[in-house]
Amino acid sequence: MTARFIDFDAARSERTKEPLTLRAYGQEFELPGAMSAALFLDVLRMEEERGKDAEVSVKDAVGLLKRVLSDEVLDNLIARPDFDLSDLLELAELVMRAYNQTPEGDSGESPAPNRAARRATK
Image (cartoon, rainbow, N blue to C red; front, side, top):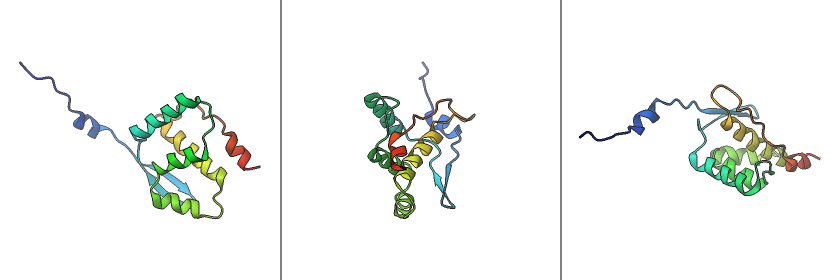
């Protein structure tokens, strides 16, 4: 009798995960090539609790970015005097949108407008 076998390590090593590059203030930062499963599940949980079109709070935006950006990169951005609340919210939205894109391009879903970001710019 032969044992059934799945070689997840081999399958995983065959996938290519090119890093995501973030350009901000003339500098480029390398982000993980894919969203972690834990972060993805947390985003799904937030959507289930609040609805898919709910606004992202500043606390949520910081929490999401802390899980994708290194502490050094996030601290450097936040320390800039010209990096404001609307920039923080927009950066979180752009990062999440980039991770939601399919390899062929856009996922076809556009993120919901964030009223908090619009209010912060007024």
